[in-house]
Length: 275
Image 1 (tube, one colour):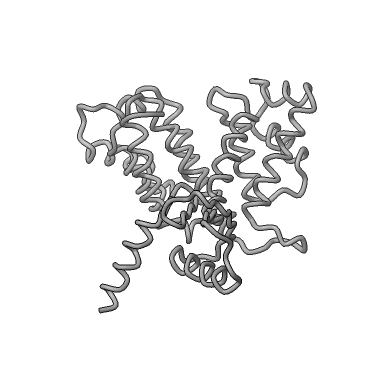
Image 2: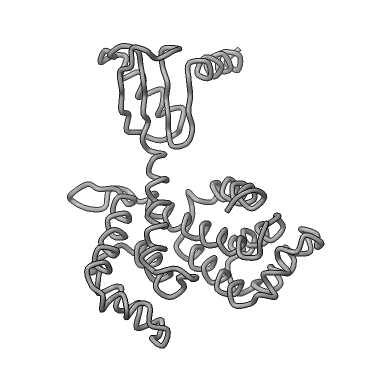
C-alpha cells in the first residue's frame, strides 16, 4: 500500500490510537466482520473507493450497511475509512484488516504480566503466533488442510487451536481470522504479518538511547524517569555509547527519534509552559 492509501491508513491508525487503551476483542471481531462484508462484494468495494463520491456519502453507506449489527465504535471506524481516499478498491479492505489486527494487539498490550514467567501480553501473543507458524511449517498435511476450500471455517479453526493449545484469546482471534479469511494469501503468511504488527507495537515500550559517554547511575535513573514521564509508560531503556555522536544524545522509541535539538526544544517548551 502506498501513496494516497498509505496516507489514509496512517491517519486512520492515528485516530484509532485514542480508542486502544479501552479496546476490546469484540471491537476487533466487529471490524473483521465488516471486512468480510466488504470482501464479499466487488461492487461495494468500488462504491466505497469511488473518488467521484463524497466522503460523507461513502461513510453514510457503510453506516447504513452495518448499523445495529456492530458496535458504534466499529461503525465509526469503518465509516471513517470509507470517507478517506484509496488508490485501489482492495486497499480499504487491507486497511480494515490492519486496524482490526491492531485492536487485537492493543488488547494484548493492555494486559499486565500474564504468568509466573512474567512475560507481557504482547510477548505472549507473539510467541503464540510464532508457535502456530512453526506447527504449520512442520506439516504438509496441516498446510493442505488449512488451504482446503471445501473445509468449513469451524473445522479450520478447530485444527488451528489444536496446533497451539493454551494460546491466548488474542492469538485465537488473529489465527482464526487467518485460517478462515486469508484474503488470497497463505494463512501462515497472514499470521506472519500480524506478528510483525505486534513486534512493531512492542517497540513502543523500548527506548534506545545513544550517548557520547557512559552514564552514571544517577544519570541513568534520571533518564529513565524523564522518558517514562514523557511517554506516559514505563519503558525498557537500552543505552549505547557512541563517542562520535553529534549533539550528545539520541533517543529512539518505536518510529520516533529525538535528537539533542528536539530534546532541547521540548525542554524549552516545558519551561515556557511552567511560566
